[in-house]
Image 1 (tube, rainbow, N blue to C red):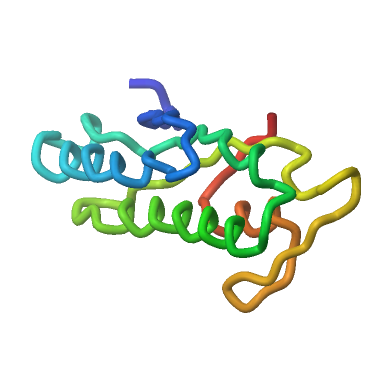
Image 2: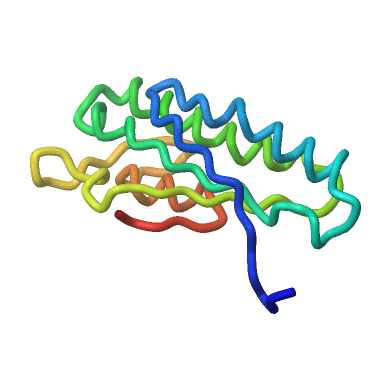
Length: 128
């Protein structure tokens, strides 16, 4: 056993529907029903969905729907009953901009660029 090692299941469908949100349940099921002890469980689920690049300058409605779908990932992870399933998201450095300028959007009662909202949704993020 390696100290502090974390194992994540990775989903990367990368469609605008954020199909990954429908797949998280399988890691939750495995952890709750199949893993015999904590060392057999996934520590988290990682998502690499790059479809946002196609709507980063789109309408507020499109971008808000995408954020709502991302939030469903954390909601699904929260259904795990044995321990806590962490969530991780890979995003691009330029998603908070449109045509080289900051592109703020109001969502969940806060006005930020979308990168900030994405950071707030997940336990951890990485930037590509």
